[in-house]
Image 1 (cartoon, rainbow, N blue to C red):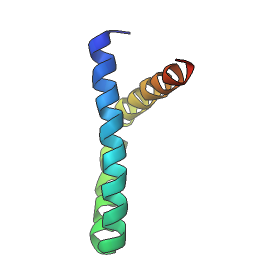
Image 2: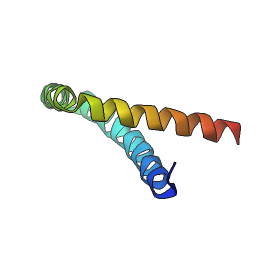
Image 3: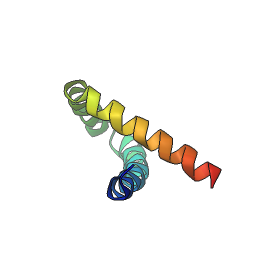
Length: 69
């Protein structure tokens, strides 16, 4: 795997963790806005399903590689 791609994938992984925390905070503080967010996210995922699956696959491989080291 290209090293620059690994750096980008690790950054995406860190950003996903931050987004998860922010998403949880939004769900607690403003459930109505959270519902809109979930709806829009579902639309984006449907449109770019293959891209999401590819990134998830790469992130899973990186996680496995990190656990081995």
